[in-house]
Image (cartoon, rainbow, N blue to C red; front, side):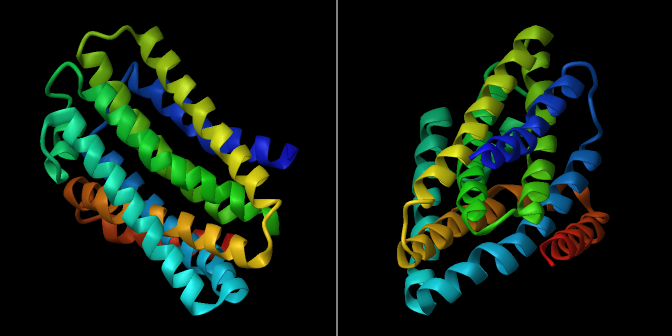
Length: 243
């Protein structure tokens, strides 16, 4: 369990680092886009060669496939509900508004969105620890958290929130997501192989949906043309760490 605590703190520390930087500095959008692209490549590799591969071998094609679809569907449903709650409409426009820092509440809207994206990622990290240490997934989550908290901190600061409040808010978010790693590890440790396969694939489906809905569109929008190279770099690093 101590490993889960350390992994949770390590993965979530990027939120604190990003908020510290964002409270003082406005990064070029290309920087955040490239970081998101790198994280996307790393997450794709970690999902394919760790999470879903283990789920497939333990539970077979049917269970792992259904778990994957259920995880993706759950993320889409919750994400759509969050978008409607924040802006009265769903879709990718909400994310774009959130990243632009154009209105007073967008930083907190992005904070909520990052929390939604981060919960399945960190739960997946915790579940994966049942089978051993997952460095590739840890690195992928770290690099996905960093640019999102960086942009969110900038938006909150530009809306008038003090630097201290920005850092404190993102630090609390980091603790919440670190706890999700411990929760995932605790719940998964008592599951048999069949249920663990479903849990792994479910978490993988939720993370995959967050990639398609949030990380990769933002990376494409702001990171071109370097996003392709960054995605390949993230994929390669995660693959090496998984081996």
